[in-house]
Length: 95
Image 1 (cartoon, rainbow, N blue to C red):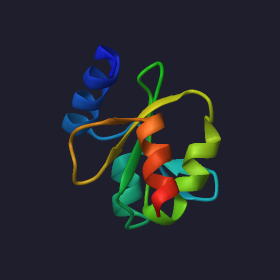
Image 2: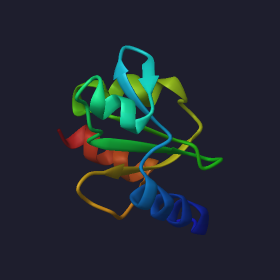
Image 3: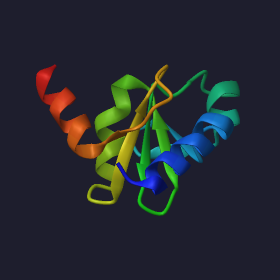
Image 4: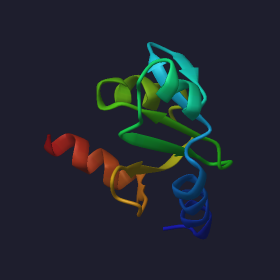
């Protein structure tokens, strides 16, 4: 696991994701997602530049597709330790 992924994950745990998918491909800030849409992310995708996108479980596939090929890892709440995209794909395949 890369040092960048660990660093990015620590920042996300401390501050939340940059955006949260609230429907389809529409995203909002974490605060607006909570206050207006009553949505908290269950999963957070971490991009190779550190940008992050959270999503509730039912929108996880949509979130993953938005930057497919650019994600380096995932945080699945309440776990605060990131996993790589390879590990995430393995978990998804087991569901």
